Length: 117
Picture 1 (spheres, rainbow, N blue to C red):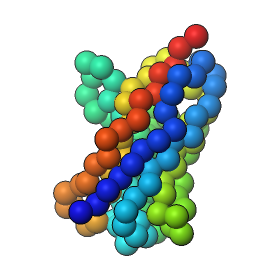
Picture 2: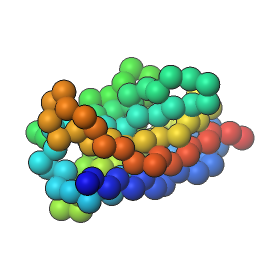
Picture 3: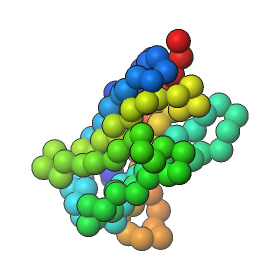
Picture 4: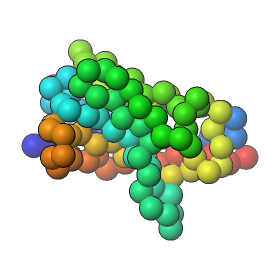
């Protein structure tokens, strides 16, 4: 069973930065994709960023240029560097792991990010 533990959330002022971490209990280099999602109260879950087995990253339109997904395969950890944070980035951020394309995903418990002055 995959265990994913997110950390790094908190309260930050607009324009600030945070780095989220997702520590996995598995070899993430063996996984098709590791993703960051977010969900704000009353809103649909949104895909924020993906990093594929190849190491190729992809970022959603709303965060491109501000957020960067990366990974450390030696530590089995995925990161989300978030810069120039806006109030609309306030959400709970979740990490997911997909072993196979089109297969089911494992999820972490999430870490809350609040952007407010």
